[in-house]
Length: 407
Image 1 (cartoon, rainbow, N blue to C red):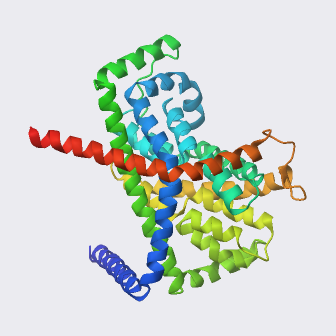
Image 2 (image 1 turned 120 degrees about the vertical axis):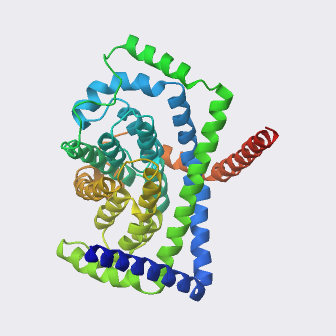
């Protein structure tokens, strides 16, 4: 009992000391903290919010209209034997892949709240359905940072195949805790049964289209505001830790480890930055000189798969709304990082031709020019999407407040 109290007291002292150091650092470096906060805000405003919002809203609508149950019936024969999750996991997986972090965790929590999955199934879902979206990998990383669209193919293949491997590994997780009964309501795999469940789900929801759309917008924007707070916080934290020398100390240890595995030690510091926030880390890795592109691709792949503590904090706050535990998610991110780093090294050697900066065989015709074009269009329109959505959210919140006060 005394040991438990001593451990708890030590934890309290460490947390309080860390908060004091952070507060003191903010007073010492106010200008740098403001600049880091602005960088985080710009990234959220220009990239994260406009890229995630449409997918969050669409996913809410699809759940309300019963499409999740419909897909659950059809995907049960694939998801159950491969990942040991119900067929609705296919919907979570697809939306997580298309929209990016932390959409998979958000949808896994929704499925758990609705009792569509068990706790272990929810933990498996959250673990392998979180990934960076294709626009971020091809646009921000390959085009924006490396100025080399063909690298997007290497990074994307490694990233998504690595996540599939994580899902296959985690199918063995939690077998002792699993009940032999599943919370899935699917009985037969057929179009007729799928349509019946779709209709039943929509009727039982009971909300009108207008009400459902309004709820979807409000819920999505609230989640994105939370995500924005974490991005800004970790952007500032990364800058402060760098200024007071803590990142340099940690990087010296990782530099030794990098040398042992044949990677340049000068990638250690941007790698640590990437462990905190993937965008900042990926940009720093791409700007590191005196190192090979091969090494940069491997490190960026790990950082993308690991997700950074910023995304993990976002996921932890989302998972806290249910009984889904965070520890399996963290383990999955480490595993995903290892898989993605190994696969990116293999795909770089197999598919990428450095002398022409192309992917061998043109796996997807014209993908380089298309991604670059859409990324440029997205950058031009993204701020207006964010501003319009926030104004809409204020209008909806004001309207709801008026209705509440009138009652």
